[in-house]
Amino acid sequence: MREIDDVTIQRAKKGDKAAFRAVYDFYAPFSWKIAYRTMHGDSQAAAEAVQETFIRVYNSLKKFGGGSALSTWVYRITYNVCMTLLSKKSRDGETLELDEDTGPTVSTTENLDMKDYMQKILKNISPEERFLLTAREMLGFSFEELADITGKNAGSLRTQLFRLKEEIRKKFGEA
Amino acid sequence: METSLEKPLSKNAIAALENIPPLPSYLYSAVIGKINRNKTITRAVFGMAASVLVAVSAFTVTQVANAPASYSTEVAEELTGVNSYINSDVYKANGNSYGYYEEVLYQDQD
Image 1 (cartoon, each protein chain N blue to C red):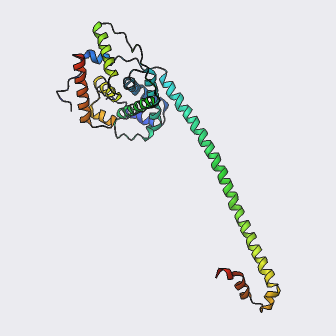
Image 2 (image 1 turned 90 degrees about the vertical axis):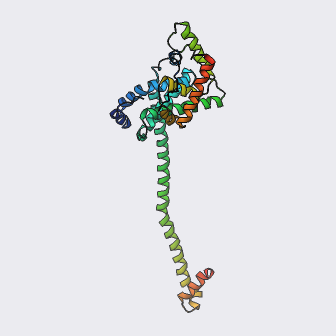
Image 3 (image 1 turned 180 degrees about the horizontal axis):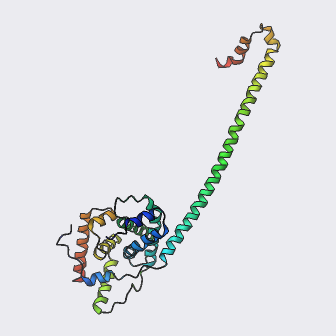
């Protein structure tokens, strides 16, 4: 994972607003992608998760000791916030409102089919698996980083993702 | 360490997965707005807590300041009692003994 420079982190820790803005600009796009996919394509819920993530980052940055990479720390917060929001929504009986159009127009029939396939796949897997698929396949996180973020064993996550991908391949042929 | 057995998803599948709208531009302002609101609320709560603390401290200080005065009153009352006993007939009838007074005064504590 890419990291912002240490000087900016130190300045942000001291309460420098411009440095905090730089931290936000650097990590928020990734945090957004994780939240968007984990919250199953609900823009409102994903925005709420990213907002809460960076409020927590702002409040706790002074305590960040550098035991892990800042990216891991930020994405762990995002992951935890998403899980909390999902369980809260589930408890309150709320359903996620999926976006009708998620981003750029897909032109070819093949891509259109794949987009539908992916929607079906994402609909039928757990939030944790959605996070795993996004963070590993799309953002390229290592299993060690994923273990650090989720608090689970890297080997178990590897097996979980392997099974998930096998299932996807069986269901949708190539995928 | 990645295994060679781990086959990535196809490019099309990843492209479909990456089909995500951009990060909303309003979000940073929303984050800062909420941080500032939280700060205002925290300051108000701390302000109220400080006011309560000051009021409680002032009350305690007043109580402590009043304590010696009431103690002095108690001592004065006791001394008045001793004085009137010394001047009483019972005291004189018992040979002007102060020890007797103590005996009478503290007999319940023995």
